[in-house]
Image (cartoon, rainbow, N blue to C red; front, side, top):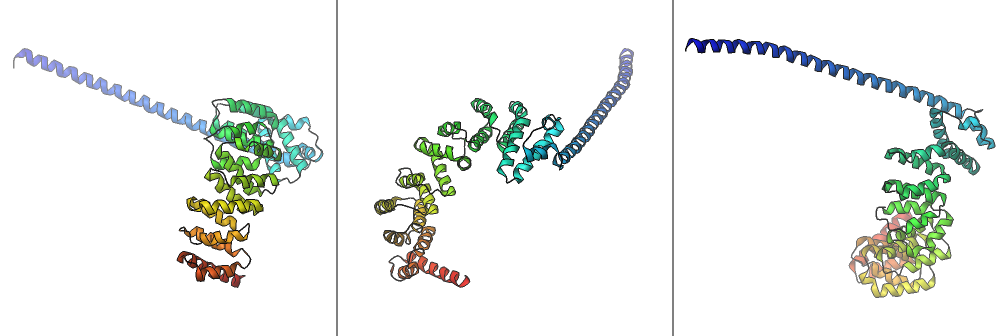
Length: 384
């Protein structure tokens, strides 16, 4: 290697050695700065969490004290519930005391059985929280709006019903919010509910519809019955199911249920059969009409409809139904045979009729279910 090349290699080696030493020092400094920054950040996060925890504990402590003060025998709240006079001290409270007042009123509302006291609690809640709830309904937080709606529902603050209408018209109103608003309408007897129920709302489940129907006031219930024919099918079925649970006995409602037995829509027929089986009443004219309809179309009825029909025949008796029960005891579905046998046992001399079926019925399944039912009835009599 020439002298020139040897000098160049030595120079390059010295240059690289210097750069490595400088670069290593730089990397150490950067690493130190990063670690220091991380430690400072972690310390700051810890201090913030510690401060928030202490603030939360202090708030809870103040709320508990405010709760105890409100529940004291000589408190302004006790005087109001006893006499009905609101003092400025009840309304002019800080946020912590307002939260405590809200929880106390909810507790009193759940425990009270006196209608006058419950009315006073709701009136005070409207005066104390009406403005607050109105503001919170416009919150961007979904959870805060939901909680506010639940409080409005519990306290039945009717002054906010127009504000709830505005929420319903908003495209930002969620499905869950709409459902709670409809429940509030139902509890408060707000006539706007009828218009909402007439709309086709596929987002609502059957159980949600039923919840609303069971909360209706008598006045709104009558209006819903007036507009029954205009309701969506899903709402119609919920109305009929609510009739079953309410155990309706009025002539008008029973006439509607009897008319639905002959509807083209199979689901409405099933719901009306189940409702009438629960209520246990039916006019003689409808019994005759039902006998004729099932005699002609029994073979094309669905399994669930046959089951509800067998159950109904055990609650509303007529001699013509016995022949149908004998036929249903030979049904391919076991639960229908069992239901028919139980229904037949409800008739006068029902046990004797079952013995007759067990002996002479042409269908072996009918004979078997009759024997099973007789054995079970005998066992029940022994255990009684």
